[in-house]
Length: 233
Ligand SMILES: Nc1ncnc2c1ncn2[C@@H]1O[C@H](COP(=O)(O)OP(=O)(O)O)[C@@H](O)[C@H]1O
Ligand SMILES: [Mg+2]
Image 1: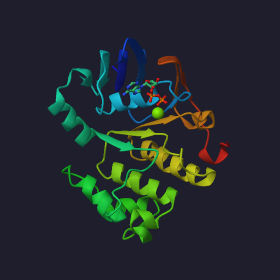
Image 2: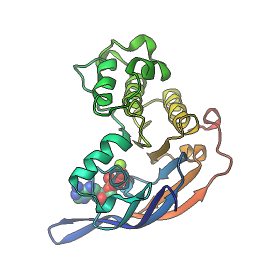
Image 3: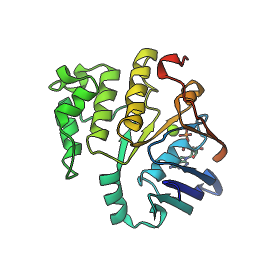
Image 4: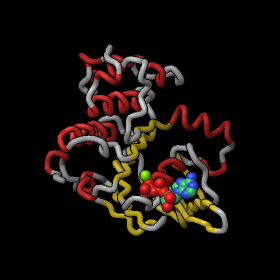
């Protein structure tokens, strides 16, 4: 069995008489340590899928098997444990705590697990050794996103889920962030899933899942991912 196996996952929203499918019969699998890109236009259902994979939302139907456990069957307490120990999340707009320094933001997240990496070292690993005592407002967008990545990876998550992580960043800063995310899969063996609407990012992935109208349109394996320095948008 693959590390991630999603089978027939469906998520609906009802507004008045209308039912909207955010995810419809979504199925795919992925291996541990892969860099996966989920590609699709706005509204395609990408964030819904990512939130369900991260245990932040639940589906209406289907299986979401992670490392042998169907998290779709988890109760709230099991989901809390799963989110806490197994998942790191990186958002488009960083979501840092504004009155805490970079180091404190990372420590805050690290505190909720037992075996967290050192906050200062993790910040140094993402190139922020000299910014640990800065508050978010004193950092550029790219630096704030690197703090957010440090916060997510200090927990040593098995799965790193990233929702449009470069969406608010300029071209070069976006590439730096992608390199750090790719390193998490290549060097740490984390399974990294990047959601994006930017097709230019897809060639860096080991696996590309294309979504359209709440459904998976295609899943492609890429045996020779492109170096991040060679992609352009
Ligand atoms: N809480 C919600 N209530 C109603 N509709 C929602 C809700 N969340 C998402 N949707 C709808 O589900 C679809 C997929 O949304 P989303 O997963 O955010 O797409 P993407 O991340 O690809 O832009 C969209 O049509 C969106 O409007
Ligand atoms: Mg989205």
